[in-house]
Image (cartoon, rainbow, N blue to C red):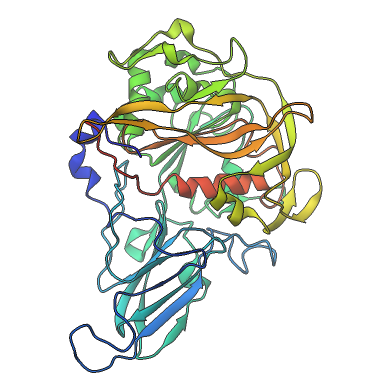
Length: 461
């Protein structure tokens, strides 16, 4: 349960500009939901109607049948599929607030295998919309009486190009290119750009929505300026649905000593922005939101006391650097039930053992560079009735350093006050260049979509 803070109250108009906000839990595990009318009735005592049905599987961008090796396809869980007589409003091309409300008209959410079936649709001409987060594809369909239309991947694969006029929308993304974690390779494997035979990202069609900021690495140097330039300019930050700060050194970390930069990062998330941070860049999460996650090491963690919520100021002398020790985890487990059900049984490469069928209860996660010792429920404000509201981070994946240490969270998300989300992983998303998507990369793909969905009760007084 998360709410909207002061900046979102200012942005109230923007919060209601997007497509009809999503709801959750519309369909069961099989991804099936009937329409509003029972079969054979028009709701008004009229003649019997032979209703139509649609069905299919929603696929990840660039990972549908025919796009990757047979059996390596990646489905999308929880995608919203709906039919409407007119097109949906465009997704705002900047950060926006999306509270969860009931979805109107015939609709369904996909199951863990990406499959769906929607019955009891009145015959006619419709706009078919398939979306998850800020990925959306729209197509026109016609349904005859009693027709069951099996939709092929042309209609149900989320896009990797942005052309809203032609019914394709993808998020606007900023990546702070660091020294180590080349997570942009995942986008190349989604078709947002290109990849070479070794799995290295290249600029190409679809990558126009990805802007690179320099953060100590040698890749894409100077294209948009530095990460420091970005975080000092809130209006520029608000152009991006997601800001990625993958593992790097401390090239721009001095910006975190500036109170306005720290406020900009909080305000970006409050307005609906998504902040995704990995391992040694963890100070961009922990310095700004120090109460949610505790990192191992006296100079590594930033204590909750570093932030004064009443004054909205930070004691920067308490800041840690989030630079922990390296380890691989050979007993990682997807503990969130939806992620677990989605990942289990998929087929793809692994960091050490070649192509395998994934066991979501035990798989390798390599190149960890921090250890999370605690997740803390944090007060984030009060609701419209004046009652206190808290948020507890969600642990998606756990694993241990070795057989003698306990398994701890490796991937977490949390929701500070407002409409956005923060994601932190202790490991490199992409450990080395390679073909295909290993489990930890697929988890990134899953969570890119998951953190983009609507927010329950986002209003904060």
